[in-house]
Structure formats: structure tokens, C-alpha cells
Image (tube, rainbow, N blue to C red; front, side):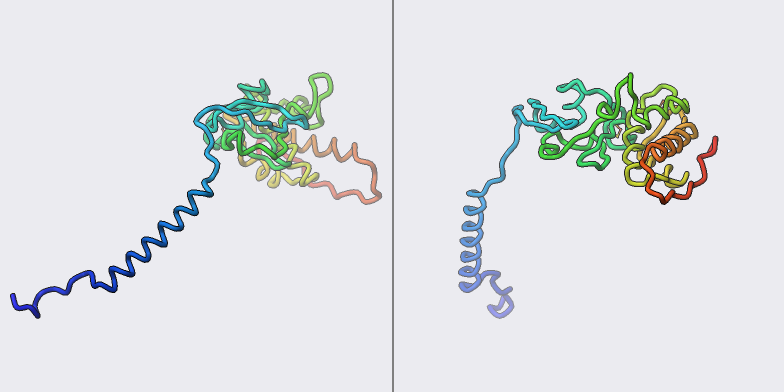
Length: 218
Ligand code: FES
Ligand code: FES
């Protein structure tokens, strides 16, 4: 093969120096990055403090433990239920800083610094919250497994929208599944709770126009 036909060398002296320079730069960055290593959690358990229903609660858990399991297995707060364990059913619904979340989808360590509110904080068997009472009065459950999550979502919905339409109730509870199919009664319970809460509110002189009530079977 003639010299002129040979493929040009991939590396010239110039490119070698450039490559070596880039390598040195990368080595410099990684040395810097190494100094700022992110905190590594686990694999051993460590103690952390969760704020649950207004009280600090210490739990010792591995980083792989979800908020749901920390609540149920470490703190014996069992209102939130583990059903699908993958964010699909809403049985584990709790509030985090006032917003509803699936506790099975949040690591306990990620809940540190946030206020966690569970169904246990709403009322007692002797003095149910208006939402809990409405579920009882309207027979809004069969097996009851979805009920704590439903009550949490319903409570959050009525805080945001005290006078929801049926469609708004359905949208507000869209993340909560009831395998017993008690939806019509649940929607009636939400409607009933909204009316009870509205009556309990001090009069402001401006009454909100009532929205159509939830109908059975819808
Ligand atoms: Fe968390 Fe189903 S158990 S969403
Ligand atoms: Fe049984 Fe809803 S009442 S899952």
C-alpha cells in the first residue's frame, strides 16, 4: 500500500495533548466531587424523627423502609392500610404538609421535616370528625379497608373545596379505590359531610349557593 493510501492516524500529537489535558481536568473534577460526596444512607438502620399528628416520633429504620411501614410497624399507627404497596389504590393515604400522599410511595427518611397527618388525628370513636360521622351515617363502606384513605382524601378535599359538586367529589377521590364498590354511598357521605361542616361554620352573611347533592348510584 502506498504511503498516501494509508488511513490517517487517529491520534496526532496535538490530539494526544488535548486528550491528556481533558483527562487531567476530569481527574480534577472527580477529586473535587469526591470531596463533596453525598451523604450515603444505610444499609444499616438509623434513628430519625418524624412529625406525626403534631408530635415528634422517633423511629429506627433502614433507608428502604417506606413511610407507611414506619407508621404501621414502628409506631403502631395503623389507620393507613397497605394494600397494593405501589401507589395504585390510595388505601395508605395520609397528608404530608396538608397534601394527600400515598405513604407507600414515600421513604420514611424523605418524610423527615414534613408534617404527617393520619386518619387517627381526625376524631375518636367517641367523637368522630364530621367526615367520619358522615361515612357511618351514610353507610359509606362495606369491608372498610379503603375507608381510612377515603376519609383522609375527603377531609383534604373539603378543606380545599367546602362545597364540591358530585364531579368534584369524584375527582377528589379519584386516587382512592374501593374494591367493594361502595362509591355511591361514599359520594353521599362526602356530600353529607360538606353540609354538616357548612352548618357548623359561623355565619359570614354570605351563604354559598348549595350545589346539587350526590345521587345514589352515580
Ligand atoms: Fe399505597 Fe395502595 S397501598 S397506594
Ligand atoms: Fe371494602 Fe371499600 S369498603 S374496599
